[in-house]
Amino acid sequence: MFTGPVYDRPVSCALYITKKGFYQMEHFSGFVTKLSSFLDKIAGLVLVSVMFLVVANVILRELFKSPILGTYEYVGFFTASLIGLAIAYCALKDFHISVGFMLEKLSPGIQQLVEVFIGFISFIFLLFSSWHIMDYAGSMIASGEVSPTTRTPFYPFIYVVAVGFVALCLVVLLKLTESIRKVVKEWNQ
Image (cartoon, rainbow, N blue to C red):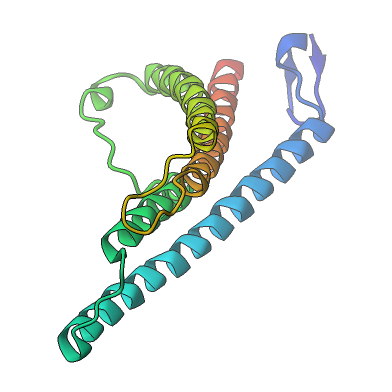
């Protein structure tokens, strides 16, 4: 047992956290926050472009009897991209719905352990999901699959969703480390 620079009292060697490690976590947290915020801003621009596309299509169809070819496809592509890009920021800000009525009946220590377990499972799931989405985009490149009306390739939009899932994976990792830090702090008291 020894006194660590972050703690006021002795901690075991396995739980020793250096100031350098603490600052690295702050740097990682800042990176994840900036990345998620940046992707969310891009998602906002995509949403605005979908809005303009739909409005322009309606106006052109009604006034000039000439709709924009492939509007339905583009709205689908852009909406998938929008969701993929915005999901990490949504998770970072805890905007997702969570059902915690079962956990509320447990002690705070058990709640934190369950949070770590769920965070770990979520991280592993999202890591594999990101990998498989990127692999799927690669298979779309290899097959040359395109949309039927506009002949737009699918793979760029699938890669955008994959980037969003990688960002979500980083957010879940950040939240997992925060949960582990809470559990370690609880055990040291």
